[in-house]
Image 1 (cartoon, helix red, strand yellow):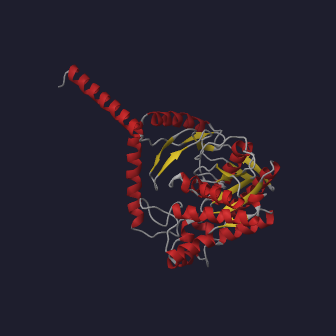
Image 2: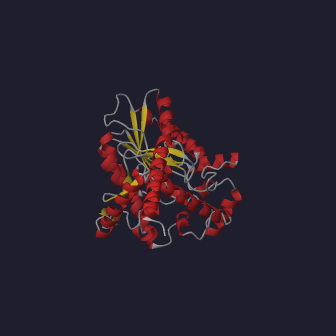
Image 3: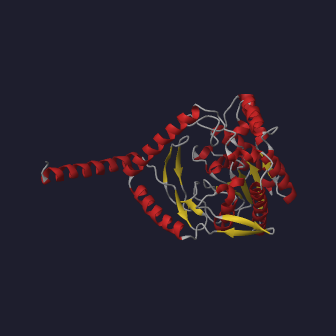
Length: 387
């Protein structure tokens, strides 16, 4: 049996080794922090001032600005002569998988500056997992104080519609809006519960521990990557898209009261966002992003998938958003046609990465480039960026 002195020496050696590892990781600049935290306003939000690498899907250096969003810092006061755009979105727009300069909103900024021959500034307020309800609160709480000229809702039909319905989404930490007699009512019962507040307290402690220690971050990252790799290997052996997934009901006209309510709530939120932006003097546009299956560069896979769903094509959500936007007087940019054409002509994957599965997940650099170019062209052709 080891003596107390031997136990003490082993313990001291472990502490010293851990300390040296911590110092070495900091010198090397290796960091994998927890970028988001729980909060009562929307359920969760990004943490200000954090930086580190993201390698779960794609690879990029992530730096959150002082307000917490993945973007460079922007002053509240708009520079004279600058056309300022604020982007609302979810993980498709936060774009952790690609470098900041390759995101569609960075490309949009450069393209707008070129077409108007004057400065344009695009501010990103996108957060993973957000539905339109959370984006409205972000508009009110974070965006409007920056005095944007245009608010752009980057709408992802892949999950944004069912994110807006508790019955379909069921996320225990999300806030929702409920449509009652044509009026939106905020339902924040989730985040005002004792369960949520207890969870937020303990999650905050856990995040603080992780974000304080690079060694803990590295251990957590190793675990996450291993789990992701195992999950990816299982997916590789099956079909690319599973028509049994209930999320894919989005490609059909609503067949249940729950889906009808989800669409109705979403459309009411479009009008509310338009009115919030208009009241502050900003224009409001929608850019309808692509779901992976819609732009998968294999026509036969798309046809087979549509047939399995019992629909002629996969464009129902885009067509509905465009029609509703027209009714509400909201300019809308539909990206599915130009991006799908590009994917087919070039046999190019617009979603997915070598360390996940090509054709699935979030936009890669090509997807972001095409989206930024097409959104900029729509704004410039309309004359919106030169007003």
